[in-house]
Length: 112
Image (cartoon, rainbow, N blue to C red):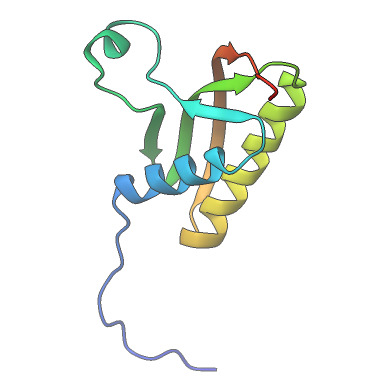
């Protein structure tokens, strides 16, 4: 099959990748919220818990989270890595090099 002429190019803003990673992460049961990384960024509220780096077309994601207590943190982290990788690959077709999950805090779960 012959391809047609190239019309132009498609670019994806890193903010789109941040939104995909954030929404996918927050949809995983056990994730309470995203949080800025520890350090000066947290004090100044400069970050919202997602950092994206794109090098040579490969996406690397750092996620900073607060999770529910009583969860298996390793299993939760792996689930987040898998789902964020799949979401980015399926939605924008970019290769994902790494999804680093940083669990910054554990929030107690209050039962009513």
